[in-house]
Image (cartoon, rainbow over all chains, first blue to last red; front, side, top):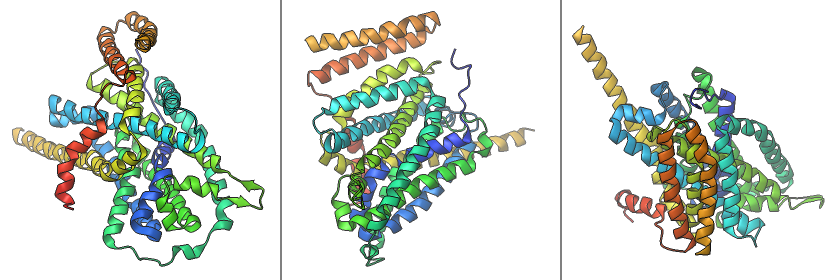
Length: 374
Length: 75
């Protein structure tokens, strides 16, 4: 019954979703990981990573063209055959599921350590997961429109933060410039792209199919990725300029500490809740999109006509596993720095690239055979 | 025991709202998948509430990726 009503979002809404998805966890966490590698040169690796993300967004656009009117799961089934395609599709559902649970866990850890210190973490996870379940049950269009509504607030608050921080900037914290070695830069860039770039692969689950003008989406994807990564770059630069590289690298949530250091004429002080609200907005969208793609992917693998019955059970499952995936913050940092980048690389770049090449070769042979048969 | 009954009550409540919709629209395949999934999740929830062992999915990923990482980063 629901299938007949086509889900359509506009290219602008896609841009908004990509911006919010890219800034999601990245804005709060990656400045620390990057300054740990390249010290005060992290802004440079961030800028290089920005352009790599742009290239990756172009790659996604190319994938979208190759997929045509199919979704990603159907495309995998077409290229690899039914059974292998379904298995690889399950890997993506697993990827999205892990993303949902870890983001819930991120939210819980952040709120319990920084804001609501006496609240049990399970309660916070349940609150966010209820919100996500309602949003996903309402559908992609509702998520996209909510994004349109909140993105103005998102940028207004970020802009306010940047303005308030201007008096605190100390340019000498950038010196000595260009000190980091090539391998350090490679590590930092890899870290950046794996958080801000590769998870965008999940947009392929709905991107060309549920867009009302699929042909015009090229610049929307590129601009969305550019603005998202640019925001992260600005925050990284501010972290280095205000806090300095060594303090940034030691913090768990450096941009939150950044907001704490605002003190304007002794009137505007302690505005770190601004940063928290910015981050909660973006993490809500990031986890919603992860969860939406998880449910949608599972529904397509099982060939279910209506994805809504799957939302509640999977949501509860994600909430249960959000308390298991990261037993503590040390484990979270270790896993995120060692295993997440290669995992995201494999899921985000290597599998789609191989799929695309196999598809091109298949098409080539198919057209050759046809021309011989004529 | 009491917690497990509470969990079952919540899941029955979810089923109570979802199942009539599915029957009304004659989506019986979806009904089977939904029931199986709900049953599975209920078992996992009860295991979790009683603090019994549940595998960490991140450990599975780490186990699968370890040989690859050792291949490219020998130290």
